[in-house]
Length: 62
Ligand SMILES: [Zn+2]
Image (cartoon, rainbow, N blue to C red; front, side, top):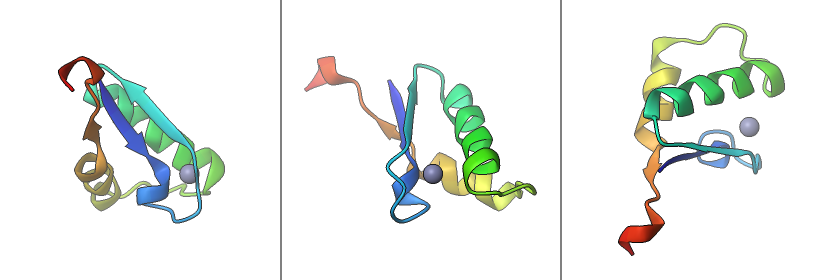
């Protein structure tokens, strides 16, 4: 499972999203940034920043 916590990018935000598919996590994160943080122009650098902050949270492995 891949998890993105918005607080790692936007301090103070406790929103997060998880999905098996990293592309879906990025998609949800971009939608959240647009809707909640008014990032209407999603730059490639923001997508890269999201990808760098996605964590592997496979609970069965631990
Ligand atoms: Zn947020």
